[in-house]
Image (cartoon, rainbow, N blue to C red; front, side, top):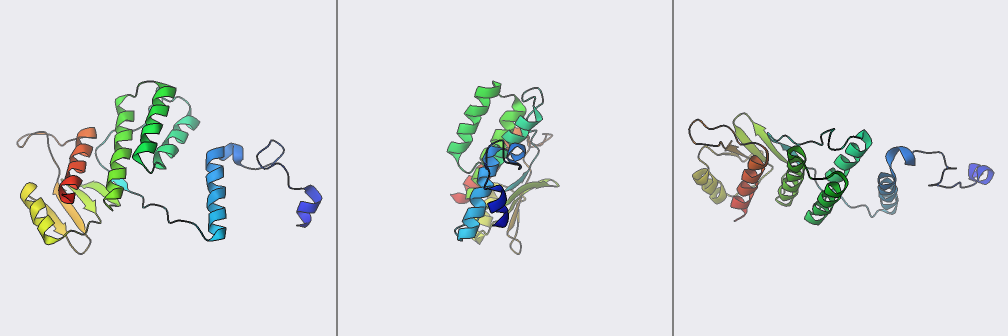
Length: 198
């Protein structure tokens, strides 16, 4: 209070105020202030569970597409904070409008974000490649669903103690095929989630 009396409140967002707003960006600053106020009031909502997607997908923002490091980081941050399909579509339109048609790695990046939303709705926190299987966890499945999955995807294993479903990694052909990658593997994983939900 004494400091406030001596120096005054200052201009929080103006040039006279020393601080980190310019460094972290206005959007992030406002979000951090909002979270701090909500925490102080005791009305803070639990953040949605983060979903780790570790699949063979080439997904990134190339330097040629978004040249400035700061803009690339801003786009990654926006993509990571997307919570709905509508937000994702709005960001897709914004990126296309600012930088032009998306190259394949950027389209893959948005496909990963879309799949992350689907996995979050299914209650998963991880979809990853492990050896020659794709692991979905945590996934509490009744025996009937496990049996159905084992019938549709031979070689599927379910570990009830850790609620993990391990499905053999799909390939382009039954014999001599190569493992699916990029959008194809994401679509296959989304199909697995849909199959279990039915």
